[in-house]
Length: 56
Image (cartoon, rainbow, N blue to C red; front, side, top):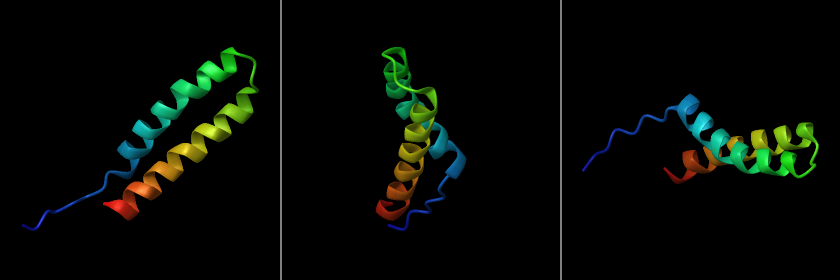
């Protein structure tokens, strides 16, 4: 059957960012640089959205 798949880019980015943000906030609590943690979170969120786009 045909499935109309509309990707909600903002929603996907928020969900991926929250998932990565939880882990990186733990790393910040352990002494990691907040800027590095923000960079990791953004990279992980963008990578997750791009992977979802290619797989879906």
